[in-house]
Amino acid sequence: MDIIFRTATISDAADMAVLNTQLGYPSTTESLKQNLEKVLTLPDNIVFVAEYNHKVIGWTNVRLNSTIETGTVCEIWGLIVDEAYRGNGIGKELLQRAKEWTKQQGVNKLGVRTNVKRKDAHRFYLREGFTETKEQKSLEINL
Image (cartoon, rainbow, N blue to C red; front, side, top):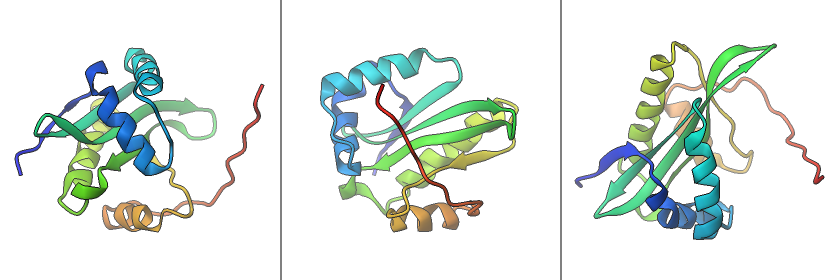
């Protein structure tokens, strides 16, 4: 399988919207394009994609984050591989890109949060060397 790994561009939005929907976040091309345009302008973010036959079949978004309690860390804000291509090392390679980018930022810690129901994702990250540090609730309010 000849997969190209590269940084995302706005033209990837349609394929990325399909992947978002697979992950349980229904997205239209237009809504994802708007989100992607914003993220790509942020200096402390990177989005990598995996492309096969001119189609994006996976992506990850990594963000540099500084907080009072943890200092500066990088965090994966999303990583998905198309259901039809899972188990082929694509997620592992996207994760490798995230690790390399983290080191380039001068940071030695990469974190990820994943929904408690995503057991396959938990196994993937644990297999890749992550350790579970805590469970938490995610809360939000519409304003």
